[in-house]
Image (cartoon, rainbow, N blue to C red; front, side, top):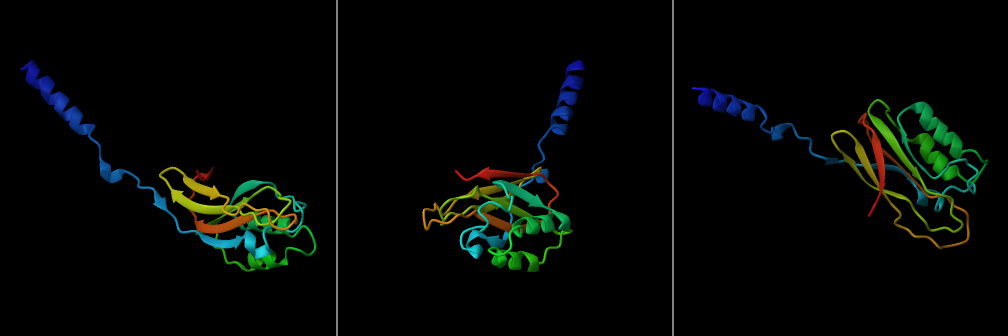
Length: 164
């Protein structure tokens, strides 16, 4: 009788521990909507790095942060009007959307790019893959490549990773 009771308890215990595949989260590749890319301003920001934008990756989820980025790009009079026009006129609903912005280091020649090539939502985070598709070496001009995109607001931590 004890053996039957032990076997019954073990059976119930094993059934309770069985995997429920229906609750597993499947990573989802998100659609990215490019707002601005380095080619809009002829391969980067035109202020020789004086805009104060470091090589960095940003998640912008408020109007205040968005305006701060626009103000940083507008640091110098002239030179960045094409990108400023685009940024000032883009429609972003920060209740439903957030912005990802990646900025490369300041380059001494043109023709470089920094590119958000993939955004994947995982169960506990969002992974953004960055690549440098244009390798540069064009005309001697100081530039700072960037890429700014809009994605659905997910309220998850964002990890930026380099493409392999």
